[in-house]
Image (cartoon, rainbow, N blue to C red; front, side, top):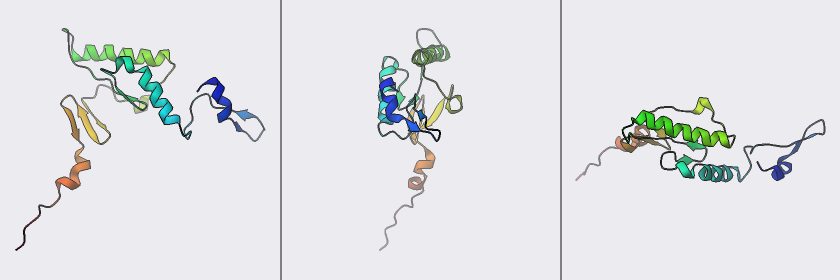
Length: 135
């Protein structure tokens, strides 16, 4: 939250004091776009291995230059954490997924073999009865 915008989010308490948000609260109409723009700008230098989607960052790595995929991943992960720390941004550990081979994202399963639809999402289509020609 920019310092000059804090008064616009202020609310009056029962005691008559004004209370202003120091971070973007939920419910502001432009909050999602603002957070997305900030994250996109912050992570643009690491986009090759850490793309962001709104407030989610996905760190992925492959083995290269004689180093294992785990070594490269740790290096990439440290870069992302350093960027967050420098900007005083935090991650909620309860929502974090570490060292996953695959993960569910926007109705798709994303992994080292690519992207495929979540079987639960396409179950209705997969189980659709084959049309029968009746004469």
